[in-house]
Length: 91
Image (tube, rainbow, N blue to C red; front, side, top):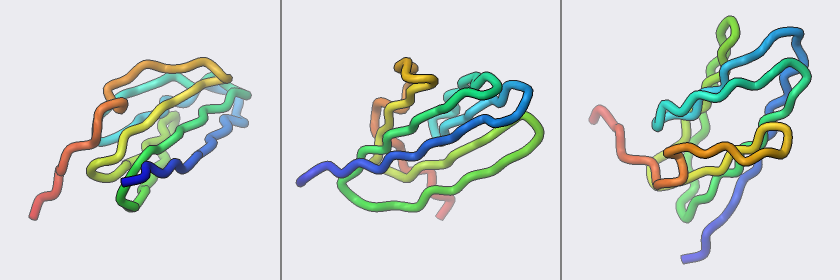
């Protein structure tokens, strides 16, 4: 099955750092003021992206089976999101 890719850009236009959290892996990254985070989501089955913003935090939830790659200001950020997301359904 062919793997697809979605690119998601997050620009921190504020004057302070933002913690960028990738769920369900709970990986956290600091995105400095005036910096850009680029998240590439690889998948074979389309799912739903959910986001949450609170003071100093941006959280993005990905779906079961996908995996991801993150760059901050063009630099690769290692994380556990390189392995497929587990099923975390409460059903």
